Each structure stands twice: as structure tokens, then as C-alpha cells.
Length: 293
Image (cartoon, rainbow, N blue to C red; front, side, top):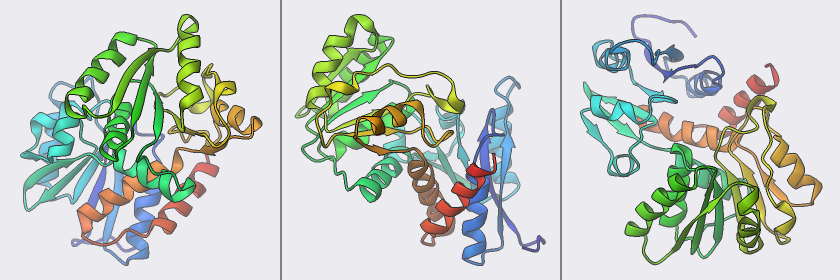
């Protein structure tokens, strides 16, 4: 593309951002639709005083289309926005900012993007299903919310710090009282309890960073899962984590993290441009970028 005075800019705020695949897939999408736009990564240091506030103000000052927001800024960025979508406000986290003629509006597309990728790649629909979520951080919060909103009948939140899982479960129980929402420890002492949950599960999803870049392995009772259960991991580097490989060895259906990345990014693209995102183009670009690293 030719960069000129009319080129629109979008990007991503994070610390770090060197690992992100978003520029590859978003720029491929802009090119596929013939848009005069460019997507770039912005390293917004969490150590810089007022760095995040200044970065957000730059969206308005420079006339950016908007940005994606990744760790560690998803929660902190809310206070610097003019408006926050009710879903993102309830989650307490924003992953997409849209510049609407100088008005900065925050959204969260993580959970919805995950459900779309799960449906498209495996046919899974959450209604009347039982789900075990590993982790209790921001990604877990988004995915649990989306599962419950889609009428899952049971969600178990398993976390090493069980008190954090319990707090998350209590919060969701107040909103989704008709579903069974419980917490479970993620350690050797709680393995029997976790195994019981696995025996009933239709889906197990890892929302932690364990396994990223090949570092660490989750010790989960996969042997307790019934045939037909799906094992999902939102980590996409590597695409086939230790958890995914272990599930494959047991003949279980698996779901990797690349689809979530693409679909939550596609939703952001549509919010910025008002145009339907070219999903296949974005996924191909993300896969190519992943193979090149």
C-alpha cells in the first residue's frame, strides 16, 4: 500500500507487544478490502508514569481509527475512556477502543470471539452444556460470562488460588442464578474433585498462559473426560500446546487458540471500519506469521 496523508491508523497497546500476530492479520484485512489503513503495534510501558493515559489521549489527538488493548492494560484503560459498552463495563476489561469522531468507546470482544471460533471449528454451542474453565483471570472472566449468557447449565472455575475462583463464581452467580457456578482448586489435593467435574464436562478450556512458548504444562485429569468432550486452549504460541497434544493422544476433540485471536480481532476490525471482516484472509495471515516465528 501507499502511505499518504489520508492513511488511517489502528494499532494495539500492550506491554510487551513484540509477540503479537495482530498486525499481520489486520493489515491483511485492510489490504483485502482495499482500505487505505495501517495497523501497528504500540509498546505502552506499564512502568511509565501516566503512559497509558497519554497513549489513550493520542488516539484522539492523532485521529486513529482505534486500538486493541492487551495485557496489562485491559482493566486500567477503562477510566480513560469517554464511554464503555455495558458488556465490557460489567467485565471490567476492554480489549478494543473505537474513535468515534473524538469520542473514545471501549468494547470487549474476547468472550464473543472465543464462542464464535469454538462454534465454527467444532460445532460446539454452550446452551445446556457443562463447562470447566481453567484459570480465573481476565480471559476466564470473559469466557465464563459468554458461556453463561449463552445458557450453559454449569460452569466450574478451577484455579490455583481457589479464593479468586470462588470470588469470580459468586459474582457470576448473582447475575446468572439459574446456572450452576462453582469453584474448584487446581492442585493435587483437589484432583479428585476436579476429576468429578471433568467426568460431566462437555468442554474444558484453559484460559491461563501455561504452555505459552512451550513453557509449563497443565496437569489435568484428562482421563476422566467422556468421549465427545472437547479440550480447548486459548494459547496460540505454540498452536499445539502440551495440553492439546495430551488431549489428542487420548482421542479427544481439540480446539486451539488461533481462532479466538482471529475472531475477536475481526470484531474489532468491524467496529473500526463498519465493514465485514475477511475472516479467511485474517486467519491465513495469522497462520503465516505464526509459522515465520
